[in-house]
Image (cartoon, rainbow, N blue to C red):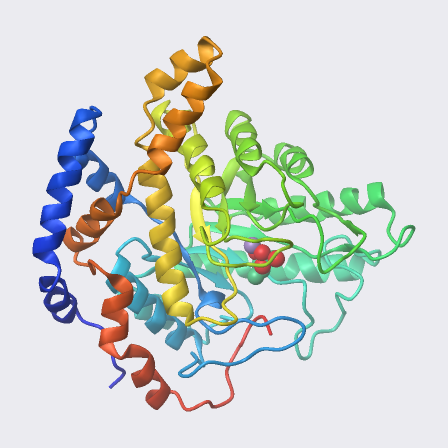
Length: 430
Ligand code: LRH
Ligand code: MN
């Protein structure tokens, strides 16, 4: 029988901290009331927050230099879901799972769907993969996929995406995400305008087969694996393509896919205003697409991004319904711990963004009072909303202190026993 963290264990762990939490919560509640904020409203928002976990994030990640596997690595998509269940058991905001095909290709979609449902999980976005060659694949993606000079390779890549769409319907997924590494390493290697035309032509063939109810996300990225030109390199090109494709095509913003110091919260505000913000791959980075834990390097940027999102939510912006997803690579931490704490950092930024006094901010903006405006944001960002987050998790059946509860459960050690480091099926990123 595979070890699982159950609700009774979590409730027992919470008993150790509940009285402190209630004290801190009451104290913060009084403080916030003085600022005209109802703490119960914040707790409701924290309980309602949702972010999807990447199936490819529960195994240890690596770089081109090395991968140092951890104990109890998941060896199949089912064991990945077991780890996702443990995360959801403790933080209660991650019932959605993003899958990557063919890394998570199931023998039986029905079996996989019921396995997930039995663990309170569902499938969020399906991610296609035409950035690697699979065993037995006829044509190589070495020189591209949806933009390849050879129409047969483009066709093969489109076919793969159509397969992902069919699988997505069987699994009850809500969206289809397309990221391609297509581009060139040297000036002249790729005809830049023709590559974009071919990209759009291929996307149109995929969009034409988009099943009812599903949304399509296209994910831009400045560079890597191509190191000179990448076909969908920035948000502007992404926006143009989503407009060309149609109403169910949206731009997906992966935080690590921008040049250093780019104002990502401004890109978010733009895509909201243009009605094409589809969703996010949250992570953090210091230099390139480092795929580090969300909120670990630039927490103020994460807060400012949620400030724009909450502003649109508060304005009831038409069609505003972004999908929040994590996309991280855990090279030196226990992936379950990183995904749990990253989900908590997203809820923190979201709740803090709801602390911004938007009426006072508007007044300060209209009278060009830059300092007052900044202070209003800083007041929200520097408010310790920890008691709200913990109370929300507790009320939702989760852990007041997810990390402590996870470590006390001995989950990783049990998985190390259950999952001897055998060959791993559909590993994913090296
Ligand atoms: C590309 C990316 C994309 C995924 C992959 C796992 O860098 O962000 O979202 O398909 O990582
Ligand atoms: Mn991504």
